[in-house]
Length: 65
Image (tube, rainbow, N blue to C red; front, top):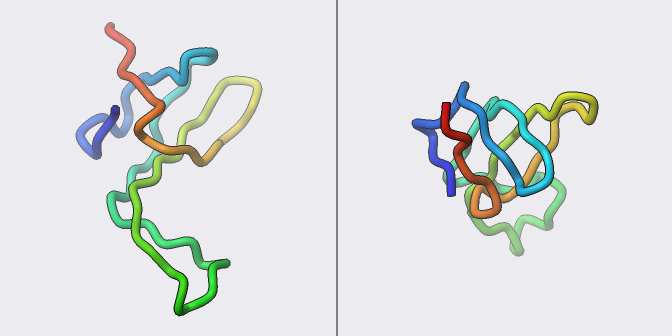
């Protein structure tokens, strides 16, 4: 799992390697209904050739340098 300290570093989702662009530990989906909104961690990763993707930080791992 990655954290805010890993922003700017290389990470992998098990298939691709990318750069962690942002991390929000209490992200709320703005498309959800106001009475159904919950907070959960969210990460944004730029994968080469696939662009930026939003994903759960729990599936990401740091890539050793």
